[in-house]
Length: 193
Image (tube, rainbow, N blue to C red; front, top):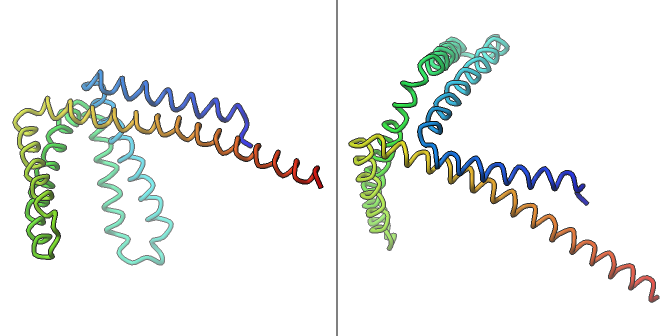
């Protein structure tokens, strides 16, 4: 059985994630700024970790020079991101929209491969690809809208995690109730014999 305090922590975490997701949706600029800061931090930490790995393994791993170069570039990129957070914040919607545009085009092109393979719903992949390409193009034309969309995606993702925590809590309670009932049934069966 899981302790009540652990269940309370899971419930609190779920509720806080839902609130955080709502805040992300309500404050797109702050969400993008925070996301840009997180990207800078994670890039810096990743570069440092890779540099340490390179030093510890360079004796027996070939091509450690390229790994060292990659780690140094990651460290520099992380420092640049952290030092120029506003630039990264402004760039995120453009990067996001570009990615959606490119993925949409790729999906549209791949749909014809699916058609040749006999995939009956190839046209749905084509339509989704075209929709993605159009949305990406519109995002490039209006980065503010793309930034808001990105904030919504981040917010909804965080809300989903919070809801999943709460659903897990309900699932844990249900399993525990079934176990209690099973134990009671077994005890009753033993007592009757």
